Length: 414
Image (tube, rainbow, N blue to C red):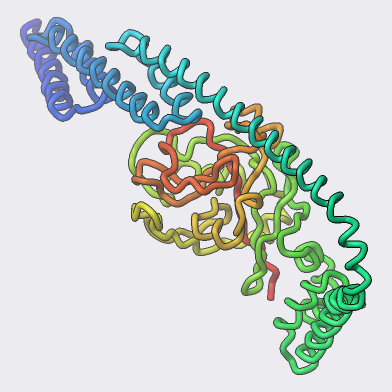
């Protein structure tokens, strides 16, 4: 009886041993070596399991050290404030590994030196602007007499130029819009009426057009999306106090919105790996947790599930993956270039909540925010810097200080 029991125990241990050896042979990361070590540890008295458990644990330690050290060095060589911060975080994961402690100190020194240089550059720039303004003021004062004398000669021409810009041109556009509206080209007329920015009764004509198109009741429901000028912001949803969205476009019966501020701080993906927008964890979070928390049931009904195209990175040619169906998404490089043609317009501050969650804040008070396009490799994601520059190379997908600026298409129901 005891022999049979011993045989059963031995067979069970052999199965675990074989499974552990198989896992050990296939392991190549800290997690997989650790899993093999834990299996061997369940049968410490069987064959050489105890010794192999130690071997796997050591390989897990080496794998961990190599991974974080490599990541730290990759961040360090970027020679940016963001890079040094990320490098320090990785080296701090392995303080006893090789010269990680020295690397931490070096990165901290480099960070401080670079921060001081950026502050000095900012102060220098401000001083230059102040100097230029003072110089301009002197020039203006010096030529005032000349201008006053010459003004009489050009007064008539300038009056006409102003009259043309302020009266004749708007009036011609107004008449053009009316003609287009009367000929059944309402969509073209709407564009002109919006550009007139309240000239005469252009807003009333817009309102009349939309009421005829949508009906009185529906118009009142979506008035904000129809009467808001492109580039201006409106209220929609609420995520920890952030409730303003910029209207980027009205296309094909839909309105494209992007949050006015960066509303949270999230990793593009939960761990460092190569992937595309289709697979990343921030996409899952936006379309589930964020979507359910930020919008009411009535607002959810207005948000369209849209086909999102994902063009490859235009600079590095890294592949951005398949098209996706999303209700909430991040903008692509192409969309930022199209809807935010200037650096200034791309800048975005962080909400109070995003700051609390650790979003990176640059010297000018703005955030670095994620785009859905891959960066220099599929292990990076592109973004927009605090000064509005597009960061085509991007940062590692698991960078923990990237800010989130979601976008949505609202169905206007045409």
